[in-house]
Amino acid sequence: MPRFRIDTLGAAMVISLLVVAIFAPWLAPHDPTRAVAATYGDPGAPSLAFPMGTDQLGRDVLSRIIFGARISMIVAIAATAITMLIGVAIGLAAGFFGGAIDLALMRFTDVMLSLPVLLLAMAFVTVLRPSLGSILLVIGLVSWTSVARVVRAETLTMSRRDFVVASTALGASSPRLIGRHIVPNVMPIIIVMAALGVSGTLLLEAALSFLGLGIPPPAPSWGRMIEEATIYFRTAPWLATFPGLAIFYAVLGFNLLGYGFLARREQ
Amino acid sequence: MLAYLARRFVFGAVVLIGTSLITFAVAFLVPADPAVTLAGAKADPRTLATIRRELGLDKPIYIQYGLYLDRALHGDLGRSYIRRENVTALIEERLPATAVLAITAIILSLILGIAMGVIAAASRGRALDHALLFTSLALVSMPVFWLGTMLLIAGGLYVRSFPLGGFSGPRSLVLPALTLALGSAGYYSRILHTNLTEALEQDYVRTARGKGVSRSGVMLHHAMANALLPLVTLAGLDLAGMLSGVVLTETVFNWPGIGRLAYEAVFNLDVPLIMGTVLFSALLIVVANLVVDVIYVWLDPRISLAETR
Image (cartoon, rainbow over all chains, first blue to last red; front, side):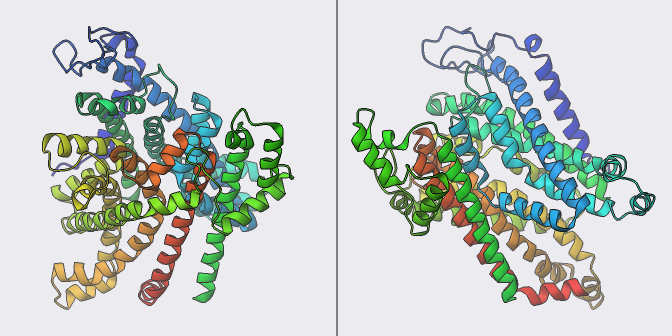
């Protein structure tokens, strides 16, 4: 039986997303911020001219989703970068130095892990006011915990390996040990966590947008499109359906990629 | 065992103190002056001074935090700016709706997750296993608020069997509970699948098979006993994640619970209410984790046997 390659499927989905995000101006049939259909306050149903319909302002939903890929990808990747920076630094330090540093960092991680993430993010974004910067920062601050745990565990195993012990015996300094021996070997798990991290940040950004705490308009983020669509869900269900499918597709793509890598490593 | 529980208890206290520090910092960072917010923009300076003194706003910040902590420990989370009611009273009023929703969702997600995990592990390597793996990842990848909206459109608008939001009897519980449960079900099924696969490779399972116990018998009696326990801990830990789902689900379905209260608080910039709901959610998570710890210790003999083998 042909083996089901989950990460290949995930990679294909992610690449298609990136292509759409990069070539949005060429792929989108219309300007996402302009009224292109003559609808006076009423969303237009999907038709041949507008396959995903038009919204209450007469804007083309398909074009908005295509441009939304840009915003969503930029936010997800940037927020994941912040998440990874914090998580990898804490995980490496805890796993490498061990002892009191490990104990303190991991207890701190445990505390952060048992906090209500979305509520905390809501509180932070409310205080800082929603903007691209504040949203990236807040997502990073609340989602690094699982990265730190996994990286710590991997670092711990690596620092007990013979080649690391040998370098230590030869007098290699801590920065050299971490940079030359630990990081390259921990890299695979970092990549896996980054793929899973993108799906997590995508969901968190979408949730914040849905709650009205997203990147301010007119940037057509997918989460915000659903939020704007909720009042029309009786009369124009397509307004909420298609942006949600886009988020689902993106999150699933990164999840398949991450878990696929993970499954292949365990074999 | 008591030492272990004592450690967990201290940890819970640390989590709560940490949360209180964060919420206090959040309130402190809000640019609006609480006295002005309470008394209104036209209040005279004397009234403002009185309110500041009553709230302790004229004292150094560490004393303000001490006062805040002291009041919180006595169940006083302050007064809502918008609703002019005690935050504790508001939370108490909303708690039953959230409890009904969350408990139903947890039970539903465990039933679905265990069923999917067992079926996947039993059909290991076959098409059904892959299909279930894909399904569980798909469930985890769905935005909760979108799933809720879709269920609302499908079940409320087209099938017309369910109310369009609100809390009005068992029928109104179906769609929100399903919305909240499906993501966790996908998560549990994957974990259980991994645990069962590992358990099925253990010696005692091989011994049981050798003694003539059927495949399903081994699965249900031997492997499940060991694979289910970590799931109990996970279900406790997952509560933190589920609370995020609660906020979104309650917002979509107009459910009169704490999640919707938090949404309204953020919407209205009602700082004491935001702080109160965050702190209360942390308390819920800590208590749930302590309960899970107790269950875990109670079930410990079997676990320690499996680990020392």
